[in-house]
Image (cartoon, rainbow, N blue to C red; front, side, top):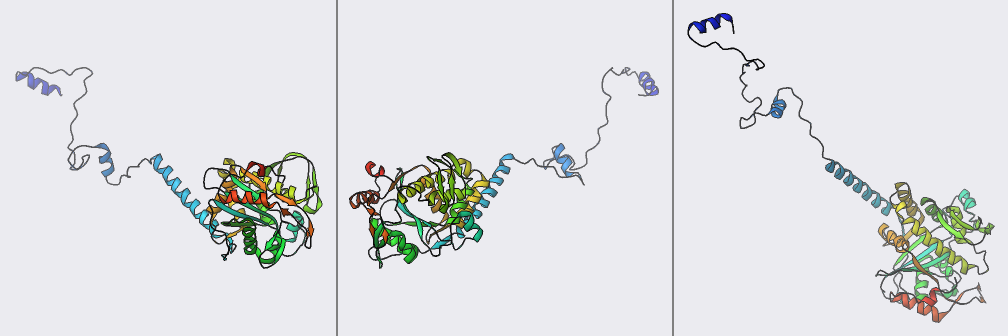
Length: 375
């Protein structure tokens, strides 16, 4: 206040006002423009006032972490779904399981016919040399197996059928079972196996030389323990004794070689052991959660196998997981190895073979004495 104003107040009898030390000076309240700093009901609001100021940038919203994670998961699931559909549509399908009058009735569980073809038509000359396949023409099968996956929680059973098994081939008399594949492809082979075993084949999968090696390489190799050194120039095999990791080329030689005293009987045992180990590796957590292993494996499987008309990728996954938890393994019981008009053959022990196939047909565990058969 000015001194003149104070003197005027004293002359009119008003008491003199002294400002207090430390007290804030009174400020003049400025009128608030209509709508500024008020919400829709006229109440003040600093954030609203800032957002409604002409030319001001809109307030930034903080993203919720949960919403971001959900968006990423949805995108990932959509991508995986698209990949699954693409791979499934890329499978090679063949008419492998024909209907015919005497076909066995449906039985519990799921029975797969697994075939290893020695066809070389899709291999380059470089691949033939690398895999030591030779140049044999035509299509034969070195590997014939039945995998029975039970409906319940029991173990699956993997049965080797020696390729020289002497059986009836419809329309072709008695011959080695692998001749059925050469005579009539997957259909005649499936019909021959069903007639010999009395089991109905539900699903079919075939893999060739190159495809087998590619699958092994896709999982990063498979660990095997070998009792004694194995050398077989015909199979391109040279392995030392001991536990070691086999790559695709070595694995193919291991399951092909017959350089044993018992020839094909030892080979089918090696094939079952390796197939079980491969399934364990393919279904392991380290493979499934690693996209650098799981994705190449999916594509390798697509290129490697031929499946029945009704098979899909989820069926193949069921096949692999059916062996991933460990399987019972057995060779069809052998009664003898005589030489007949078509050469040296394998004759089954009919009584024991019948017990084996009846147990599988009833979805029961295979008797222990049959599991202990050699081979």
